[in-house]
Length: 207
Image (cartoon, rainbow, N blue to C red; front, side, top):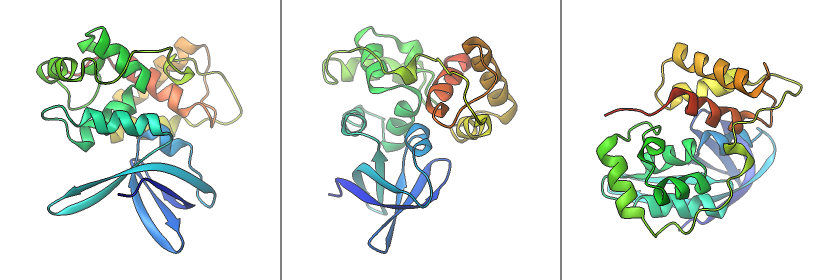
């Protein structure tokens, strides 16, 4: 199993990155928040898990081991594969996911693209007691996006589009999230916080 990758970031896209490790480029799928912390040409360490299927071998990468553990546990739920598990972490921090399961907050889970009412109920049932007790959430889930030099709102919009939202809808959600936070800009370090705030503005997905 590939437990981690340490190397030079060769490429960053909406849902994946390429990390050069000793001359070998590894394609790594990751959440927008993890990808937002990568810079082409710079060194990076990603905690990874390898998902093996009959026709593929896919590497998923995370900024820390906590996210990786939640990703692996989420896949124990019937009907939840690696793509849905990754989408869950794109919308919710590990602490927010624990809280949603602990409080049976299916509305929070339905904000994740691909999760409807029935699957949200199944996730609550099957993950209950398996993710650990909920703790205080990190700053990225608070929705606060303070002003800073630069404006990375296009990156947030592109991430939302990559998660399945229409561009116009994504742009509107970002505008509302920024207005709620009392700013009109997205700094380079604020992409994850703004992304999650915009997802909350979009509300639950139905189906």
